[in-house]
Image (cartoon, rainbow, N blue to C red; front, side, top):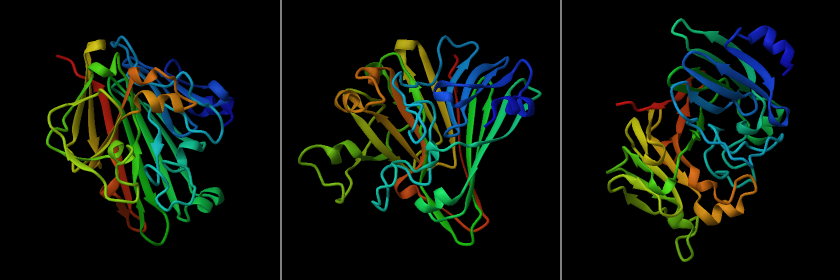
Length: 312
C-alpha cells in the first residue's frame, strides 16, 4: 500500500488517516467522537479500540508481538481462516490459516451520520493462497468504530464447488488480573478441553476429545483452552481489577473459544512476555470443531461480533 496515495483516496479529515506503523505496516488510525482505533492492513486486523469514555483500551497486543512479513501479530483481533487451529490435513501449513499473515487491500472508508467510522478491507485467492488451499474466495472485513466496535468477516465462495471453512475472530482482551476475571454466558454449555488432551497421560491428539459441561462462570487458575459448542449469542468478561465488563455480541457463530496460555506456555512463546498472561484473555467468536461452515458456489457466510463496555 502506498501510504500517501491511500490517504488521498481513503483519508477522512480529522477522523481517519493511514500511517506507517511498527515494522512499516500500514495502520489505519481512527479518532472520532466515539472512540479511537487502529487497524492493520496486514492481516486485516484490529489492533486497538479505546472508547473515548473508557480509561483503557479494550484490546491487548503483546509488547513482544512480531511485526514482520510472514508472522502473525499476537494481539488485537486476528482473522483465523480458512481453518481454526492446527492444519486440519497435517500438511505443515500455518496454524489458524494463512490470511492473518497477508496484506489486505483497503476497499473503502466512510464517515457515518452518527459519528461512527466504517472501514472495509479485503483479500482474494491468488497463486500463493492456492498453493496452500486450492479454492477461489473473496474475503472482506468490515470494521465499524463507534461507542462499540463492530467486526464482520464475510466469506464469498467465488469458485464452482462448495467450500468448508472453520474460522475465528481471535479477539484478545486487556484485563487487569486474569486471576480475578470471570467469563459469563457459557454456564451449562459443553466444551472441548484442549488442555486435558495435552496433559501428560491424557488422550493423544488423534484420540477422542475430552468433553466437559461448564458449571457456573469461567474462572482462571491455570491454562485454559476450550471450544464451547452450540453457544448463545452474548458473552461478558467481568474484570473487577479494571472495574469494567466487556460485552461480546456474536452473529453467524455456533461456537466460542476461551483461551489463556498461563505460565509455562507464555515462557515458550517468543512473541509474548512471560507474565503477560495476567493481562489478557481471549474470548473468540468462532466457527470451530463441529461448527464448520459449508458455503455453496456463489454463496457467502458472515461471522460478526460487536464489542463494548457494559454500563450500569
